[in-house]
Amino acid sequence: MGEQWEAKGEGIPVFLINGFLESGKSSFIQFTMEQEYFQTEGNTLLLLCEDGEVEYDPIKLAAHHTTPVYMENITDFQEDKLQSLARQYKAERVLIEWNGMWNQDDLYGGPMSEEVLAKQQNREPKYHVSMPKNWFLYQVITILDGSSLKIYLSNMRSFLGQMLRHAELCIVNRCDNLSNEELVDYRRKIRAMGQNAMILLEDKNGEIPQTALPEDLPYDLGQDAITLADEDYGTWFLDCMENPERYLNKEITFSAMILKRKNMPENEFVPGRMAMTCCAEDMTFLGFICKGDKKLIAPFSTRDWAKLTAKVKLEEREEYHGIGPVLHLEKIARTGEIKEPVNF
Image (cartoon, rainbow, N blue to C red):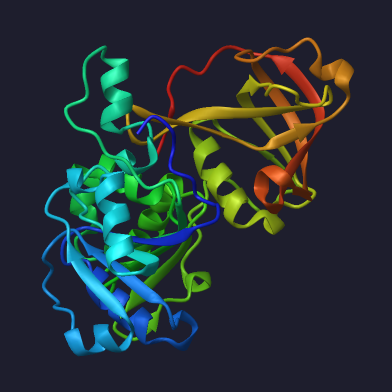
């Protein structure tokens, strides 16, 4: 693709629904089309990338001004073909029921896309994917089957990472026979791969209240000062991101790598750790904004390692697209590198 497909913009909005075969994508799309909030007078182009167990009702599709088109291969996603389909069916929005076995990173120019991997390996890409410039990614929703999630986490984690990386919502259905411990474990692993996704767990009775799930934290939240073991950084980061209010005004001590972004104020940096969220080729830096006395921060450069103590505050920041955790530095000292990445 060359350039990444934009997740915002003007033109034709695209709703991308992904998940593995028989996870419930078709049922979710048909349910959503029936909802008043999703109704529109314009035409919708529905791109189907696999044959699922649930068939679409042509009468209902017609009633909602929706035209299904089957995409046999990922290489069908070419700008000219997609533009032609949009013109033919006068589409004002696009729904994509994605094939979970296709490389979703190809749509975004992401780290696991064929274009990026080919460049890294100094070879020609095996295929090309290109999206219309006037199509913009409006929403990504991931549907997962809780009864088979353990298998996919063990054997298809890289595909899960691609599905969750841009997701705003992840629905894990069919959780009826899962223990609370399994639900907590799955939620943490999903959160690591989809940091911006709202996670819903569902059984036959509907949504499972996550506040009822047991806490599984390796430190005492009742303490005002918490010292993190190196192996607990990832657990803390995800929980602080999801429940920042429970860490408000607590002192956190941990070891981290320093990141100073270009044009960052002199009194700010990002302490964090590299994390392997789905596979070795897809590493992510996990860290929160930290601010403090610039005299304390000045001696440190990007990739230096430090042990620091900071108090957690909540502030509105552009990086968080709203309110999020900001660390207020109290003390910092150099320390040795932690070579092992965070694993989930």
